[in-house]
Image (cartoon, rainbow, N blue to C red; front, top):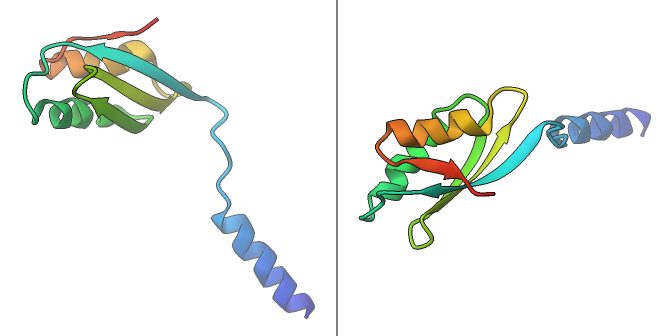
Length: 93
């Protein structure tokens, strides 16, 4: 029984993922998105930034919501990735 509990505790500790202490969420206003392919391009560019965990691009609202580790990158670098891909981005305040 004790061995089973140890195995179960180990399995739970491996699968439990701690929240990122330095996780940050920003919303970017993104210009120049004119077609259905644009959000994919913006998302791909932003995801290429080291430390970015998630990107959700909303074509209708012309925004990108980004979750990233701010101990690795920052909002300016994330916005620059979109801008360099041809879609100027600026953090929404």
